[in-house]
Length: 181
Image (cartoon, rainbow, N blue to C red; front, side, top):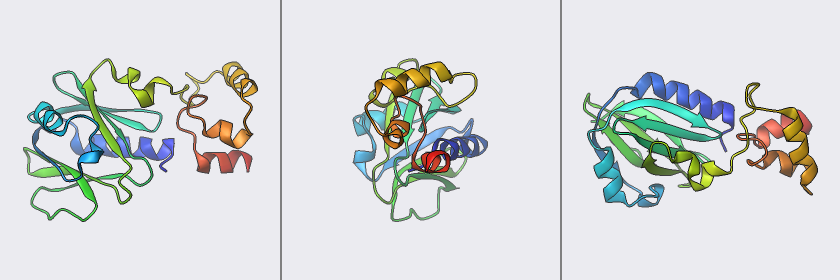
């Protein structure tokens, strides 16, 4: 599973590659990737421009024109690629966003666990995955006293507690192994 630093690296890379690009067409090749109704997802995002890409925990938040946000979770093996729209789609590509400039953003996921959900901007933090996330492990949002209280309330082994996204957002097995095991 991608860890928070890897998701942040993906976010920064995508910003350089797709910011201010306008969607001409969307091809959904594996419908379970989309949480919303597929036709509505496509209709709402067609002709919209990517204005910004944020991150919360291990979620990518694509900010579009018209106050729409696409929440994307890569899960175990999800990846994004930018390719010419004319290039043949690879086997494990599940969603293709074709841009007006002749390029496309392609979501590839061998294990098919990743998900995308379109919501009105401003309600994304109320969605199932984001609503319960703990603070980011950053100096400005992480309060050691709160973290300590949360750990003391849990009856879990430290490894399981560190993997609990409600205590700290974005920590995972690799980070846990480096710090504690």
